[in-house]
Every structure is written in C-alpha cells, then in structure tokens.
Image 1 (cartoon, rainbow, N blue to C red):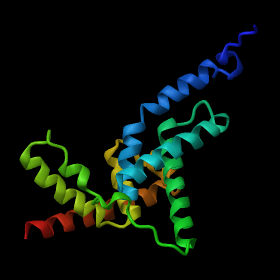
Image 2 (image 1 turned 180 degrees about the vertical axis):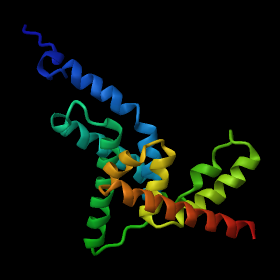
Image 3 (image 1 turned 90 degrees about the vertical axis):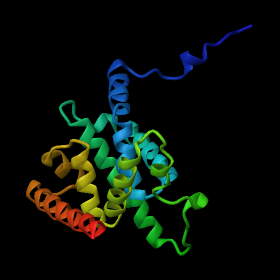
Length: 182
C-alpha cells in the first residue's frame, strides 16, 4: 500500500514568504480598525481584512524587498474597499446591513472599558463616522501611527495633499466634538 504525505503534495512556502506572512499578520488588528471605519460593519470589516490578505499573498512576488509592508497592506485594504463600493454602486439591488447590528455596537459591548471612556469613545466614534471617507481614512491611518509619507502611499496622493486632508479632517472632527459639548 502506497502512503503519501499530504504535506509533500502541497507546496511549502519558502522562509522569505513565511517571514512576510508573519510580518503581515502583525498588522491584522490595525487593518481591521481601518476596515471597520470604512465599512461601518464588523462582519464586513472582517471580510475586507481577509480579502486584503488574500490579495497580498497573491502579490507577494511584486512586493520589493525594501517596500513598506504596512503601508502596502493598508493600500490593498483601501483599494479593495473602493472596488467593493464601486461594485455596489453598479448593483441594482440595495443590500442592507448584516444582522441589523448598529455600526458601533461593538463599542457598547466592551465591558472592560471604564464608564467615562465609553461615553467619550461613543462621541468620538459618532464624530468620526460623520466625517467624509477621505477624512476618516487619513485620521485612522494617522492614529495607527503611519507617517504622512506612508499615508500618501496608502491613499495614492502627494504628501502635501495628505497634510491638508489631515488638517481639514482634524478641524472637522474638533467641530463635531465641540457640537457634542453644547
């Protein structure tokens, strides 16, 4: 009887691909945070992050060794989201939110946050969701610690444009938060 090792049939990734995969997974939480703000739905955000990783793995060979992996992954995520938005616009059928869950229900369900932080976080969440998508994106990427140059790579515009978008986004966010105080 012939016994085959199933692992011998499946191609094993080389050490470089394995290292890139592990490095990419280190950014999963940050990618999910942006995806949640872009999609406004936790389930859609998970799907978006998964699709981002699928596309990244397919394009490993096109990533230069000196490239910024984090910015590259954020760019794939953003472009994947924009592709989905374009597809939805062309679709004649409107699709509602899955499960009827509110976009910020995850925040209210987190019991580990102290009471005061929850109240402030809800106001910030609502204010962020009220911003235009381009403003929301640059703010989230800035909060994730990306430099302005990295954000420019992700959104595909010059650094000067990122600086002005970030400035306008912060001003709009301050104005929205000031409205809550009134």
